[in-house]
Length: 223
Image 1 (tube, rainbow, N blue to C red):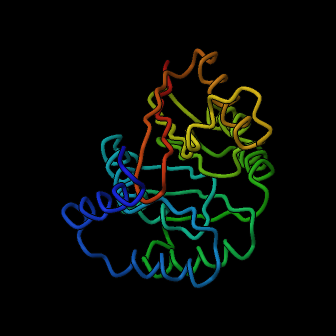
Image 2: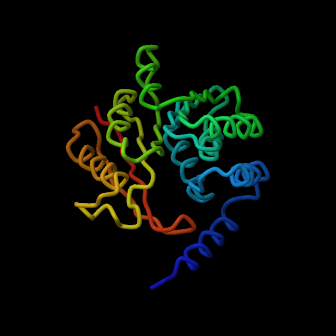
Image 3: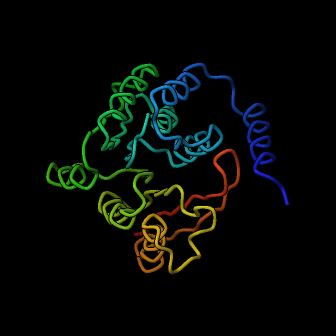
């Protein structure tokens, strides 16, 4: 059985071969670490996966639920055309401040609208504002609210919208039906909703790497 150290080394190998050196992205990770942000950024190869998926989708409008320090926001933003737009939601004021600085460093200010405050409140306000549907939605925030985020994602979708959820394996804990961890139960309810919801077809991919053992859900909204 391979060790976590092997997973990390393979991640490093992949990154060195397939992800060009990028001073901005590396600076963003350093800034996030120095600011004491939780180490929840996607890994570089996961960031590039998001970038590629956005390009494959031909996305022009992206909704990101959970900004943290803006690392994944930048990967997604770089996949969009010059007139593209990202709306990203962040509840924590310090995280939002760091993210704004990082997004500015990446010269994506005009493309990114960072909305600060509780995500569910922001989503409700966006509905009242009549915000248009998105082409791709990335859910990577507090896991207990994942089912609610998915319901909102569907409201802001159109036929063909891609919805991605991060951290949906949680070291395999999702198979523990009686887990007392609200994050695990939130993800399990997220799966339940995906299974029951006729408007979306989805699958999940298990991942290993520098972020440990976890996974992504990837779905597409149907007619």
